Image (cartoon, rainbow, N blue to C red; front, side, top):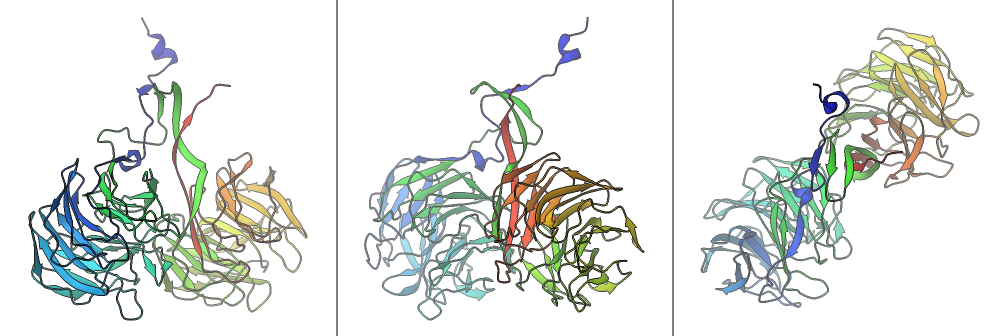
Length: 606
C-alpha cells in the first residue's frame, strides 16, 4: 500500500537552531576571569585556555613589566619582563612566547623569550618601534609595520626572527602602525590587518606567502589598536578604535571578512590571542581608562551549515524556514580605488569579486585597468580614448563601442583580447551615452544613446558585423543596461527629461515593464532581465540609491557608500557587483563591491 507521504509530501529536517554560514558566524563572547592588574596597550600569546599577557600601562606611563598566565578560568601573576614596556608585538605559546619592540618613553627594539616561568633577553630588532603586527612562533617569527620615532612615523618594515637574530625582509605594501597580524600564523603565511597612518585609519589588509605581500579583501570597518587572533586564513579581529572605541568583531575565512557577534565591552588597546577564528581571548584594554576584563570567544563545534535551497523546521521558534540569497539585505563596501579617477567608463567581467576590467572614460581617457579581486592593475590603452560608450564581454574578450571621443557621436568599436585593443567593424549609427551589454564580445547589444537627439536604435553584434534589430519603445540616452543578447534590461535614463521607464529584451524585441521607484540618468545596472540591481546616477543630484529587480517589480535596497553617477558600466550580477569610478561630481576613483549573503527566511502561508 502506498504511503501518503510518498504521494503528496516529503521529509523536512527538524533543527533546534537556524543554520549558519560558518562555524565563526555562530560564535559569541562570554566573560572570563579578570587579570590581576588592569591595563591597556598590553600584549599576549597562547590560546583561549592557556594564555599569557605581559607589559601594558594604566596611565601615560612608560610601561609595565607584569606578566600573568591564564588557565582558562583565572589569571596568575608570574615573573616580570626584564624591560617594562607597552605596545609591543607578542606571539607564541603560554610556555614559549616572544615579546618584541615596544615603548618606554621612546620606541625600543628589545626582544625577550618566555619559557613558562621567566623572560630572557635576546637580540634586538634592527629598527626600534611599537604597535607592530606579528606572526609566528618563539623560534620563527615576523614583525611588520609599526610606529617609529623618525618621520614619517608609520612604517612598512618587516623583520624575520630565526630563533637568534632579526633580518630585514620584504616590506608591507602600505606603511602603518596600530595594526594586528596573525599571531598563530607562520613566517610563510601571515596577515597584516588595518592600522593607521599619522592618525588616519587605513583599510588595507595584506596577506604574506613567504616572499611577497598581496592586498586582499578589506575588513568591513576601518580601525586601529584592535585585538586579533588566528592565522592568515582563519583570523578574528575585535574591538579597536574606529574614531571611537568599538566592540565590533569580524571573522576572516581566507577570502572575505564577515561581521559576527560584538564584544560585550567596547574597548581599544586590548590584547588578543588564539589559534584561529573559533576560539579566542580578548584581555584588558581602554574604555576611557584601563580595564581588567577578559572575554572568551567560542564558536560552536557542532553546527548546521547554511546552504542555499535548504528547507527546515526550527523546533525552538516553531517556524518553517528556507535558506535563500538575501538580495534585500545586500550592502555596498568600499575596496581598493582605481589608479585613474574618471567617469563614464566601459567595463566587462561577470565575476565582480575576482575579476573585471574597466576602460576609457571622460571624452579622451584611454586607460585600461584590470581587477583581481583586491587591486587594480594598469594595462594597454584603448586605441581611441573616449567615454559614454557601450561595453560587453569578459576580462579576456571585451568590446567597447560608440561613445564621446574625438568625434561627438562615435561609431568606433574595439575588441580586447586580454592584452591589447584592436579596432573592428563600426556601429551602423554612431552615438554617445548608449548602454551596451552582452556576456561575450562576439554577442553584444548596443541600444539607445544620442546622435545628437535621443535614439531608440538597437544593434546586434554577432562577432563580425552589426545588424539593426527592433527599436526600444522609448528613445533615451544615459540609461543603465545589463544582461545577455537574449535576456537584457534597460533602466531609466534621459528621454529629454529623466524617466523611470524600464524595458526588457528577449532576443527579439523590447517590452515595457514596471518603472523604477526613482528615475535618474547615468545610473548603472548589473544582472539580467529577471534578476538585477540598478544603482547610482543623478536625479539631478548624485545618488547612491540601489534598487532590486526581481523580474516583476523594483524594490529599494541598500545605498552605495558614496553617492555618484556615471560609474563603470555594471559589472557582475544582482548578488555580486562592482561600481568603479564615476562623478561625485568631481571625477572619482572610488570602488565599491555589492555583496549579498544567504539568509534563513520564515515561510508564511497566505
